[in-house]
Image 1 (tube, rainbow, N blue to C red):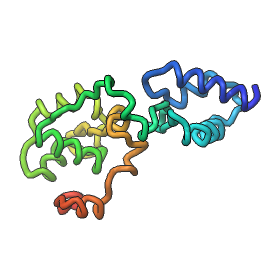
Image 2 (cartoon, rainbow, N blue to C red):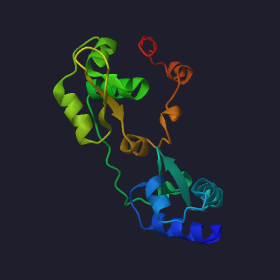
Image 3 (cartoon, rainbow, N blue to C red):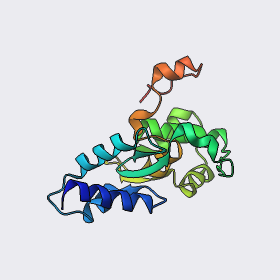
Length: 179
């Protein structure tokens, strides 16, 4: 299969999917001799000036409407989740410190984390269980998911705002560096 045909196959798969497609699933539909990364890079370049853009979401790829054309979709309903301050703080701690245990979250926040907070974030599929720590009691850890990255339009956790950006917004960042 030529790279041109591989591009066509990837385009077809991406256009028919509403969810981000994992790279390993895309690779299954192409012969072994095709360099999937180079095909994705070529498609990203092709679509960067188009009405849709090819985006990375963790280890997945998805086509999304170009940001400058969002205003055209007035009927599009964006579900905004109003979550509690405790849930936002917990989510931020998990995103910046992952993998992190419940005890570590509580140490950073200075208060206990309710099971309802963890349940809400799990129900939203923004966090998931990670590996167990090799410390006494072998506590379970939490980490963010690709759904979190997709919801907040991030390619990876590297796209999260840094300390300088948070300070520029007037936010307190003293707890971020305690770990």
